[in-house]
Length: 394
Image (cartoon, rainbow, N blue to C red):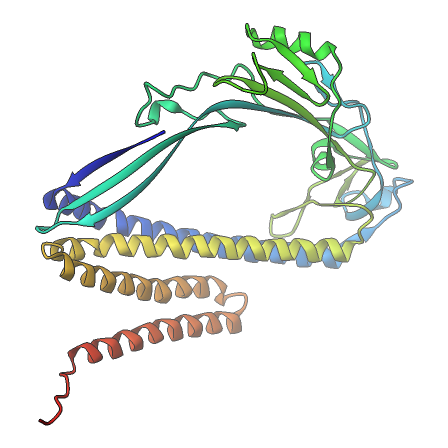
């Protein structure tokens, strides 16, 4: 089921949005400058801490606790045994021998999808045609139907119970103790077979008047699970098991916890299986690099949006004649991209100059080349448009 709505925006309303962009745009650019600077600082500090740790880590036997290693950065690996049993106190489900237990709850509910098509109108206004469609799906979280365009016809009830995770507090690795959640994070998931007793627990916990039935690894709260209705639930559990693990951290008594590097960054590395220290530090450096590039990409995109918002008023003014407005809009997008390619790499490079000057110079050069390339292409295109046509002789 779907319906279509057509809205119009006057040129004056769009002009107000453009003026707002003159205020919001610079703030967004400043925010992205801060984000990029912070990210480079975070990346450098993490790199330094990992490099420091890789040079001083001591691989030890998990069978005995040597007081001589107290406070040192150690690497230990071997079989892991959870202390206790993870249990869902609400529904009474447990997973003996596991490090963690996940409760997954899904509700059958309304989902709204929308697609819009905007056209410019003579005089600088816009006409937007939006199509709203509705369907029912299983979702792990309640979708707020009050924001739907047709909220009165598509209402989602509250979820009487939601998903959750339960882990053991600690686990032992030979003579050492490690954080239970850190161990559970390394585990592999497998479904938990549910006993008939769970049905009564679920019925009491959610207080629903619908039938509650268990089918192997799934609980259904529904009149007819083959044809679910809005508000029906399905609940399942998975356990997190791990046989062997490796950790890098500070030895404090019998515990392996976070180690504070000389620059204040905390080091605590973990991996499933028996993994040696060099591999763990190499993986941590790769993860740090990936996070750095993802934040860089997000920061540059946000910076581009900020510049585009600052320049959008030019295309709005030109939209009095839609064709001209489209040309101006393309031009402002190119300018926003050029400004981003100049300022973004410059911010990144400045943050790295103190640590890697060669890399900083390379980043600036790449940004300048990209910006110069865009300027060159734009200038050639403009010259091609302005060149008069050559008429042939009769």
